[in-house]
Length: 151
Image (cartoon, rainbow, N blue to C red; front, side, top):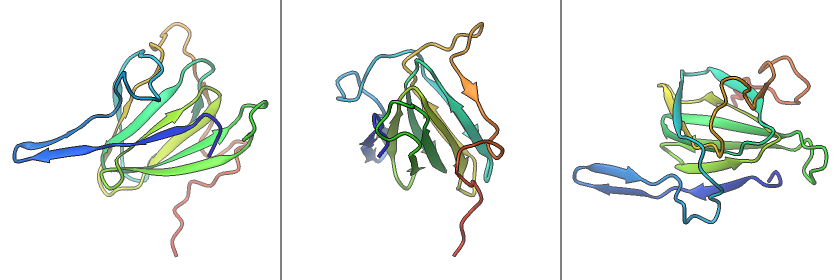
């Protein structure tokens, strides 16, 4: 696992009315601080990648559909420099993935329907000076191929 990446298996609590799933609590061992909460959607087979932050830690969970979340450690002083991690998360695997600053990340929707992703970053988005560096998902120096692997 990339140094600094943490996961939390999410607990789903169902009853006759529906279900509840806590994603991140202030008393969780991996809680750092709170910047904001937002949701984003991704259509089937769409790749949203690559980006990283210099200060911000992301806490990502998929609450509808399924995504393949991929991380690439770009921190030169890290013991896991240039390591890649893949996580499948969503309705079939409720999981929170904490992504430290300096780690490129992105995902692809691997479900037949739209995926809904919730992110709880540690910083508020700064519209004037975003803490975000982006790369093209397919043309870059990251040794990762987003194409589906049948077999």
